[in-house]
Length: 147
Image 1 (cartoon, rainbow, N blue to C red):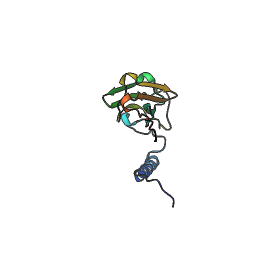
Image 2: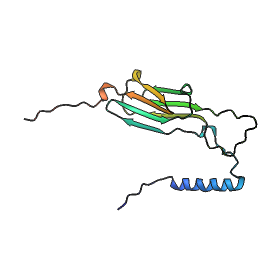
Image 3: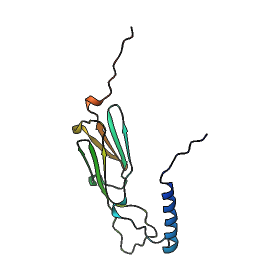
Image 4: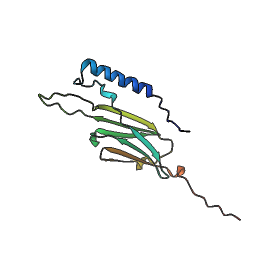
């Protein structure tokens, strides 16, 4: 028996595709895509190792100076802005699909972390935040002697 992954929003994706096709046929493909400034949301992965919780997000085209990371109690917040390039005089677009704008993502971190040792790296459009676990939540290995 083959297992098929359930996609709860598949019907909405199909509807959006049909609406995009209808929009393009009515207005033509040369019309820029109309989006809200806040519509761009970078995807996030959160993983855990024995030593830390690692949050990774794709932020291509964003200057590290335009990203703000804060940690309060158990909440990690990442804010930033992907700025739109200035349009050149006489430049006409046939299609605009890239998204711009501000974003804010907040996540509850389920374990205690060493707040003073949180580190962030920005490399190749990927932001990686490492939150070292506090000593009390790190798994401890106990050797048990068998008699």
